[in-house]
Length: 127
View (cartoon, rainbow, N blue to C red):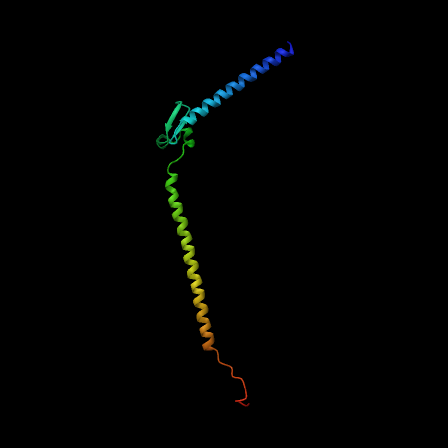
């Protein structure tokens, strides 16, 4: 065979393969792109199915592509837990700081009243 014919044959086969792969990927993208947010593409029935089907039949392979709408309900729970945790840290820190300040105040009061005053000799008191 002539080398031109072989290279032409390889080129035609390559172009057909690229065309087939492009058509397949476009078809897959079109079908998955047509599905709504609450739906997923099922290749077995070649159509979009609602995500509620995954609750009834959880072993459908395409259910992992379905977004769960319950995630929004967890947002307020996470926010509440975070804000309560921060509030608890602030309260505990305030109580500890207040305790330290009260302890220092009481220890200073005891120090000035409990220690004997050292008298020094001076011009009024001769030794």
